[in-house]
Image 1 (spheres, one colour):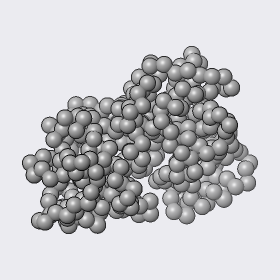
Image 2: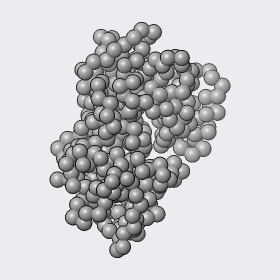
Image 3: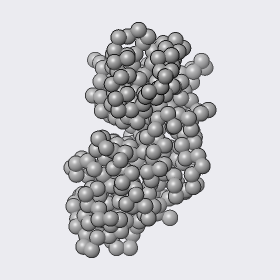
Image 4: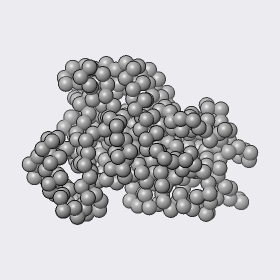
Length: 359
């Protein structure tokens, strides 16, 4: 395709995962670029293939539509950089380093903006006024720690306990007042991070035959098109069993398509059928969340693409209520993404972002 054209714009996807697991992401995004009519070559660049601000080798899509590894001599300078799929250990530190080395190259997710999303408490603060769970940050060493926890439990009953900078469902657990493991779990998280308490939300569940009612979490991808944020695509993470409180592939769950889950929803034991208005509301809330997360930033400083995690309730009028949980500045699983809608089931990540960087 565009693997050898010298005059097209180059988007370097910098990753730290295994090369074999990233090939589908390169292919999916190159396909989206072509569909958007953008003259952009997508390069999958392992962080070890960078020499300062230049690329020595990359995964590219060739003229047959195959992803191949290509060396560049002399090394080439990308026109845009997007940091994705870094190792979970040291992820933020590695992103900071890559972002600093490539500071003179326009970035889809520059580290300072990504840092806002990595800090869940800061994200919730920026989302004040949007539908989110009630939350409380427990800081390590706080003299009011016990009182803060007990007060939150009295008000909300069951709470989700998680690290403030966690990812992929790591150490996310749900507890009620008086459960013996609660303090043990808080102490464990506090050995490496502050603790975020969140009100348990997401009464809307997914019915799977022979398995039962499962918790699910929408992953909605939002991209900047040069004038506004657009919620375009996503997928669903489904919990592995009925009694499992966390819907995350990192905790044994699976990824499912939006259409499969949205056609099989249950609310308090009865079937619940969404309509296009419900999907439009998910889009609206997601786009407002992206705006809020970038509040006060100039275009060159913004987080231009993010994955939002959303659980769903139903309000008193029987309408969908999307509840924002967190933002992912380096979203994984992009190759599973599909159009955001009730009917579309085609693989798709973004056209808005390619319209922007292909101007």
